[in-house]
Length: 532
Ligand SMILES: Cc1cc2nc3c(=O)[nH]c(=O)nc-3n(C[C@H](O)[C@H](O)[C@H](O)COP(=O)(O)OP(=O)(O)OC[C@H]3O[C@@H](n4cnc5c(N)ncnc54)[C@H](O)[C@@H]3O)c2cc1C
Image (tube, rainbow, N blue to C red; front, side, top):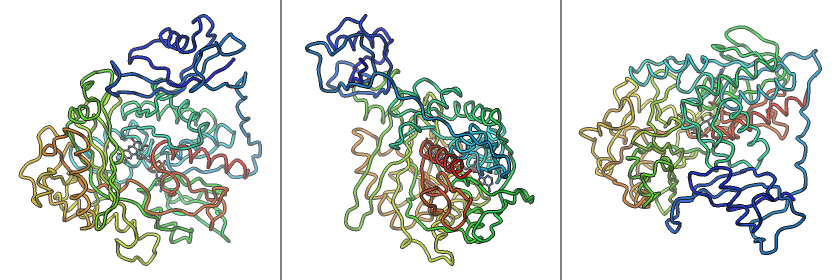
């Protein structure tokens, strides 16, 4: 019989034999009766009531018995069908009379769309304005250390997309478990650690992504796809509401199926879509700051007496505060434990911030965005209403660039100075950001956002018992946590105004984060394949 068993508790250092022993103890049977055991999910349990921190495992096991042993608990044990259902057959494309599908953007969405199309034999062409992952790294380092920006290949543009220099958190809220699993298995096959297959909150880190992403690209090429770097989509040629061609680096390429996965930093693409009459709608988003604290304080707050245990890794937090009269909601987002605060830019003269970490998350600071929702009522009207949020983001980013002296250093302030309404005399010397300068964040963020942050951050941090407020530093502005608009599409994934155009990923406004963008790309590939 096959069983799914919850809450198999094991210490942080465990092996297969310990898992088998714990299952047999739980079921009240001999270990030799367990024919197979597979860990499906692993969650950390650091509640102080246990004598030591634990992993709570969800396992699937095959038991050489016709029924459960007498006395085995019924709660948390589910009987599974005898055999796993066979995987669904992949569609294959045999028609060769159609132009090759084009995927624009080699972020998580575009890579997975191109991979899905290539596996089905559709021979996609993946075009990416930036460089390959390896060439991007020195560009990013030059930007962080010396303030030299390559507007086409940078922290946000290039192979791996915005997710390459990131924490690589693989948060999966999607209910599409099969697609999530397929994505995780592919990352694993490309070199990600075993933990991505089982951890409830997996993370890979930038150093690992730099190895994984090029391997994924090679798989696309081996399956018949073609990847072109330094290739920028300039415009679409649309006739009678149908895509006919794309212009890439000044050259026209015939195309009647294009997955547009350009992320939400590609504002020039939004402009060109608006000019071409593609249906776009503004959507609410959020802006704010990135807050940094000593990681030891975060570990202490979350792990309590277990803090300092090297097997636990750096702790992350999630904090939220509900809206109150006169104060908006505020929430923490995209925590990077043991990571760095980084500057990001994709256009000269504009600056935003975010966070990244390496696989082992060993740096001595942790950071997270603290965001406040904004809507169209917060920013000036725009001749193209769908682009009003983009114009608002750009204005905050321009102000940030100016406030920090125009060299791509990040504007920053100690929390205590921010609350007292003054500019910091100096920033902590052991801060993680390569280049930050004391600045007045009131010159960057709108008053409603500043007011909410002032009222919300102290009580939110107090939830982290013992977090030293005087050591917290704020960096601004966080502007690109999600897309400010949506490229409207129908249930078949096609733009409602332009047949043959399949907007996908975060820039389309239907996904956010690495996993959900990747899954959206997989879905786009399936939708293109259906149309072929
Ligand atoms: C610093 C940072 C840290 C992050 N950390 C995390 C994290 O830990 N976990 C998480 O889930 N999410 C994280 N995110 C968010 C995550 O990276 C994005 O949600 C995700 O990358 C979106 O995927 P995408 O493929 O839709 O778009 P993108 O990743 O933005 O990729 C779009 C690609 O399109 C290319 N492109 C744009 N315009 C054109 C054009 N005209 N022609 C050709 N190519 C073009 C770009 O160069 C880019 O490579 C982070 C983001 C940043 C910036």
